[in-house]
Length: 568
Image (cartoon, rainbow, N blue to C red; front, top):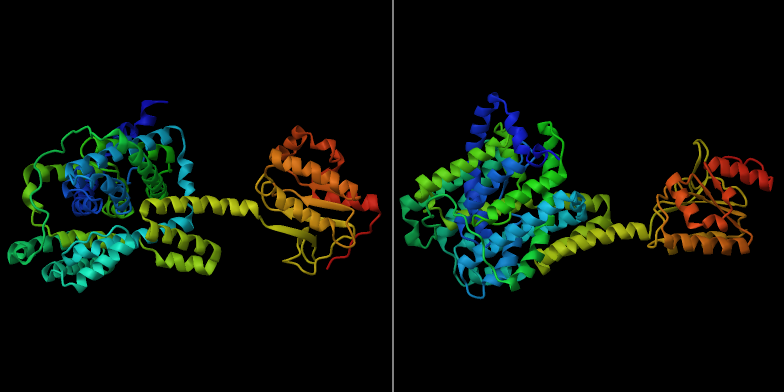
């Protein structure tokens, strides 16, 4: 494979058009106004110092510009990953309360996520994004949004709680408010900032609401001296470019970090493929899922070596950059450069940023994550998938974000097996006014041919549903009067495994003993080849495989001398 295939940035640099430069620079500056406050807010959401969010933003943008295939995707700290990172590192770091240990753990977590991503991309395992079905992903994201919202409310009100988990945090918040721990100035500036963000996003989306709120919060703290009224601020930030650092963690912690990294990788991959697909058509590109994984893996590795933490794509920031005119990853490079210049030349610019304002930024993000309309749509369209979404929601809300992602994956897989275990089955007949043979449930007046039972099984025939197939055929064989042929319309059967093959052999012998023939029509060639390889034609008559249902019906009439059946 050519170097350009592994490093898309080389091709991007070679094909870059000078006319794009002004648009990319402008989009990068606009993007920076979002990257800085969100990066700091999401770092604190992950239980880390705010400065690490800026370090992470710089390195992930630079690395993705080199290794990422998309021209417009924007990476960075993400609200959906913040609680997962916190759930992994805080229980380990809480033993000694050392912030430096938390940063090292988060950096190692980023390296592990990057490693898993890169290996999965190189091995072309992009399909793992499909482990989260849309209903379970919807439930998980809504549960995550509620968890983030409840977790940030104490910070918005100016106090903190010691609760761990949604219920404990909600209880702690209520007790704190009831005990009079609310700091009025903190609540005023945080709620006011949240209101500004939401109103501008709703009514004047072209105005950067987060930037307006952040600048207003800094101005209020500076001019009104709100720190004297109990408002916490970010404080001075370290000056200079992010320092290179190889994270040091104990071997005993690696197992927990690796488990958490797997969950974060799955969420990040799913989010990335979804976001990339949404913007690929708009930017005239094709989604390269495996290379996306390599690009995001490189971004995570780069962040991990510079005191960063795991990152993912951001649909909202990508939309901002795209709307601002971004044409290439130079937009991200400009954003990274602007953040770096701020840290080198003016690190004190954000020291008066109020903590309740960061809570407002995170709460606004959580509200954008929530999709109650999607849940209502599932309720109307398919109740079983609504139940899956609710189960995933409760998994996050009651068990936590990491167990919640495991619940979501398990539910998605079980839903697939449910459809394989109990696929749709139909008895067919000839209906009036339409060609062919159709489901009696849909055409109850359809006519069946005496002595011939036509049956359709809408799934691959495998170990999980072999018993279901056998019991259904047995039931048809015991109808009164008993059929002479049971004809399986086999077009939907895309596979037959060895367990199902053994079942078919036993079933055919059982039916033969009762004077009934098991017959197949429209079986796909690859499946028929497996039937031959399994040796099933020793018991099932090779003449009982027909290219079409009509051919099988004609053969039955010839053998049984049945006349043409009337149509309904």
